[in-house]
Length: 274
Image (cartoon, rainbow, N blue to C red; front, side, top):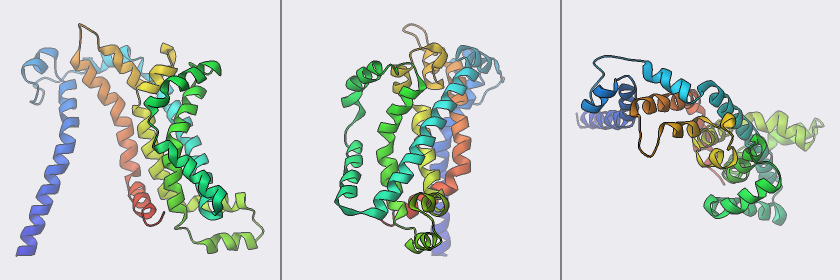
């Protein structure tokens, strides 16, 4: 009886915690489906009359599909390059060892300590001198410098859990280090890759500052930057804002729901060593 009652209490607490996290999304959905007057007088109640005009306004104001393309392109480029570079570097550092690779590992980890705000102005001047301002190449380079340190740290800890015997068997068959990594090791890093890819995708997708600084052209702005068009000094139209937030949030929410199983495996396995 005590065990059953304790289980009921735990499940009730977990359901309450889940509802606490889901409620903001439900509230945003209700607010996006209400008229402006209903939102003002009944902000927390379900909509009495559903309207989709705010979604139409959000799509037009944000230039949604063009901004969506920019956001997807920037996220895919950044996450793809980060995954490729960090996984290869993490494999080399985890397997080679020695003072050089250990020093290189500490050099990359130093990037976790330095906040971006300290390097923002020098980095902005550097991007201008390299003529990479208002290009996806410039913004992707900034994301690489900011996100590779954590990704490298994660991959290095995960590679240490991969049995070396598999690599030795590949070497006996005549495979070099690069082919061993591509054919044997990298397929075993799927949980770590899913974790790194989703976490970095969240950062790039939801980032406001970098696209605002390095992509000033309106035709290259991302979804989060376009959300700023709804806000003015004397004007805030909240219903289209909530609709725009939904249009921004739900694509990544769907990605997370599909990848969460691999993320949990990656986090638990990567914490075993390293």
